[in-house]
Amino acid sequence: MEFSEVVQRRFSVKSYDPDKTISDAELKEFFDEVVLSPSSFNLQHWTFIAVRESDIKRQLKEAAWGQAQMEDCSVAVLVCGKLDAYQDAPEIYKEAPGAIQEKVLPLIQNFYGDNHQLQRDEAIRSASLAAMTMMYGAVDRGWGACPMIGFDPEAVTKILKLTPNLIPVMFIVLGHQKNAPRPRSYRHPVQDVVRLNTLDGPGLNGA
Ligand SMILES: Cc1cc2nc3c(=O)[nH]c(=O)nc-3n(C[C@H](O)[C@H](O)[C@H](O)COP(=O)(O)O)c2cc1C
Image (cartoon, rainbow, N blue to C red; front, top):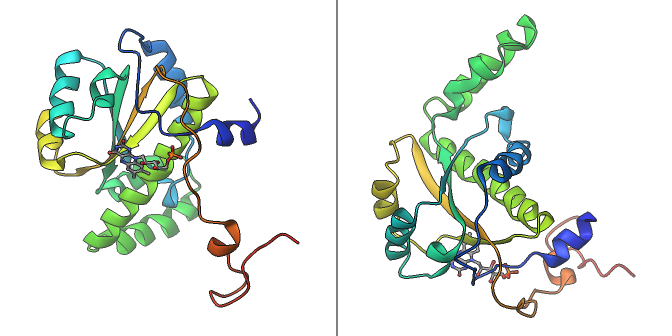
């Protein structure tokens, strides 16, 4: 599928056929692409928890204020942000030339080490970029996907047994769409949201 078609076709799918499944092999191929998403210093501040088991999905639905897509989807994926991803730098850079390691490793440590706000911001940024790759990857495979933050993070942390270094960023539920696509929802005009050069510059109108 052409990329622009993928973009045009993507919308948040809210109703899924609960009898359809996505196999481990399909998920593996999917995530092989998702992990190609960009991240600051290539720290890959993400962990994905792919839930297919009905009983756990049911608990997640309760934690998501009864939103049906959490249970009816084939796989509910919690995209977690990894707060301590900077500590993986030695592993990530182990094959880099010595001169690069000597420069980058202390830089990463100084940048993130004591800055909890930055650790959190970065985890959310990188995990969100991976989530976007997931949504486009889903469309490309003919699956539906819906991003979700409508849930109780503490309950989800407990159900999915998250460790303190992981924060729930959003769910991406994946599955086979049941109903016809909805009409495209409202978007602000491009010329209102794209300003040229400075915020008080003209809006982009393409003319
Ligand atoms: C971070 C995020 C959280 C969202 N949370 C939910 C959610 O909990 N439940 C839901 O039905 N839709 C959720 N959505 C979907 C939005 O409602 C949807 O993206 C928006 O209305 C635009 O529609 P579209 O995605 O179909 O183009 C979420 C979207 C984003 C990006």
